[in-house]
Length: 361
Image 1 (cartoon, rainbow, N blue to C red):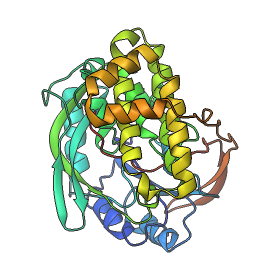
Image 2: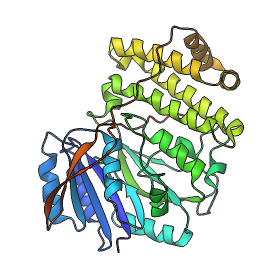
Image 3: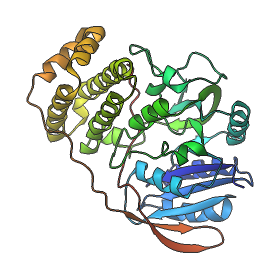
């Protein structure tokens, strides 16, 4: 029986993938599987992954026929996962030896739906420890209770899918797949849904994931139109939260966080291409007008300062229409193991994504 399935997407990361693959080998166990998803890389990544299938115990290579993005690559891995537990890793990050074994032990002991961990943020030679923003470690909690308060950084503001481990029952309930068509901020609706609909979770202080920031190929460094998908991502958060039984309590947090993300992107507008910058302003104005206006007014009052002033001015500008729905065309996937090579077709959400910015509420 497979105890743990690890979903690891790769796209044009030949510089970093060797560190990732070496760390996976240092975490291998006979009851672990590593689902390596090549998102149609055009550099030397495919050759590295082919070698890994032979060298890393439990490795399985899944290939996309076209580039679909991080969210779809994760969904491809989830569709193939056989483990009692599931976790994620990005193809340019790495792990400490034995980390996954320690996670599995903690999950067995706590018996919760999902477990969250801290991580080490890496930028060049700099290292920064990031902990899970929850009040108590090592204790089983109700994830709904960890969403609030609205004015503080909470568990839903720590969206990193790879910073934790998840029970298979969440996969079977449809809570682990990522939103269709999002090319950035795909983890925001995901983490909110997980906290609204899962029953139990816990956080521990384990530090075993090294998260590489500032990678040149990341969308956060490029600043093109794909980054604007954060608007559709948080439109989804607002829409789904508004239908929740505790909408009156939870919407102020969702709206305030949305405002913080808009402010973050507007504050860095210089990194965008001129046309994208204009579109960012227009789409942000539209987003502000779509939010529940009474809740928005309260959020802006509580935020105060320059951020609130900027957002009020932005709300008055000419808005752009809501973002269009994505193309649902299925993507072709091929599967390679150390023993066999076979081709299959599977329906996979056509999405692409990048990492969420670290934004305080």
